[in-house]
Figure (tube, rainbow, N blue to C red):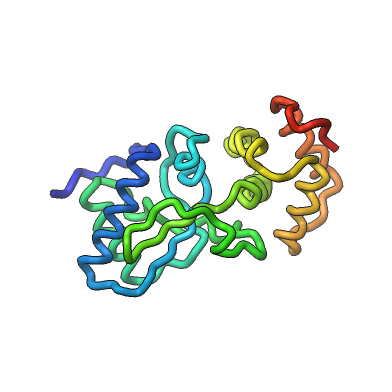
Length: 189
């Protein structure tokens, strides 16, 4: 049964999980037998990690095939979500060198396998974006990352995004953002 579209709908972790499991069910109904891997990032990944309450959509950093896109639309229709509830808008922020085997298995609903970007890469993606709303996400990710200093984060950032123009103030930005976090990890810098 279809739900009416609600443009203000947000998704919490359980709803994200339900939508992705339903996506797997639709792929089965379509006769898809090959393994379909979707790597997610952004707010949905944070919600599934327990670091954020809700998000507006599920950002994939992997391409979606035509049959997956069709299944995404079917889930949207049945749940009253935007047709782009699962989208590839974050693909542009995928860090160089991110490998599926580095990601965390979040959902396995054959033929669908959903992986989450690891905290280190997710922190770098948020830093690349650095808009006001993502700063809180960066603060939540900091304790889960393996980075001990702001210098390590900046070095990893430029390795992940080698085409980014060097910014002499990036280290200060990282220190400012993370300086507000509980200092359990020692001094920044």
